Length: 225
Image 1 (cartoon, helix red, strand yellow):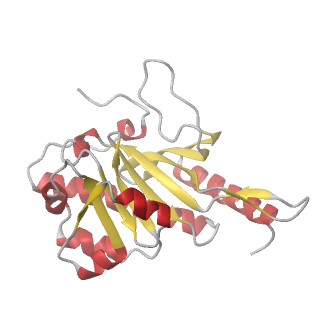
Image 2 (cartoon, rainbow, N blue to C red):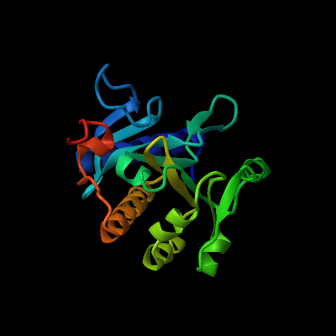
């Protein structure tokens, strides 16, 4: 790759290209929605794209794990990851809070995990790659039932290091960028869509009520009543 400034410029071009191609709203820094409107996703996030990120998946995506790179006079801020979020109160009624994190994490993360209950699955490959947790006062059964063998197999085969889960009734998906390119950003969006659609499908197959995907998942409209 080139210098830090070249990398930052290439990434900005990639984000603009994806936003234009998919008809998304692009904000250099994501703001808040008007008072009384739906809660905005990724407020304060750099390069925020909002809308139908992939076919049938609405949400917002912005830069994450930003860091300064480059030498004197050539420094620039570049992202280490992309984070995608969607409002999912229907999913949160099944599993209010959960985290699935790649094993490759810091010592600080390992200490924080001790306050949570690990959920193990029958897939050896999944358990080797991820640590799934719920708060200690939550029953892990709901999470086990939500992750079908097909979903576990798919998420285990994702090519990048990812984390995902539910917090504050929002689904989050964190994709560590291997390169700062349009193809990498689009892969991150497809990965997030796969998680969203996979979990929604599991809920429907288990007879649980779900909202149809729409702009309400992106904070652009209130949820249907």
